[in-house]
Image (cartoon, rainbow, N blue to C red; front, side, top):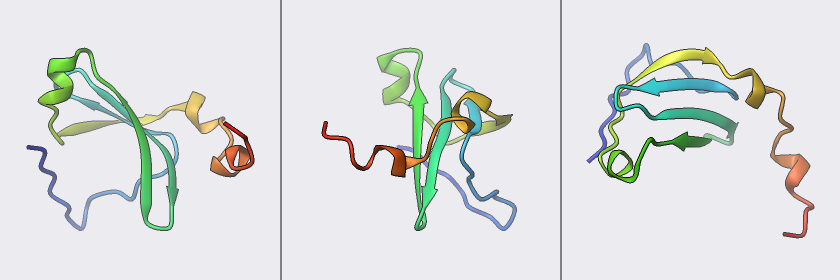
Length: 79
């Protein structure tokens, strides 16, 4: 079970914010829109994925993701 405590000091997510977790996973915010947050997360293995925790450490901005276009650039794609 994943748990996360939101407090007054919890930062608002912004595009390209990157977090590192003690289990070796990395999560990056891709988009924040209308109160929703889209992230991508990489796990070192399936077991870690299954046991993921919501305890992470902010690592700054992922510049590669920051340079990507927003969701609107992909809305008209026929895929």
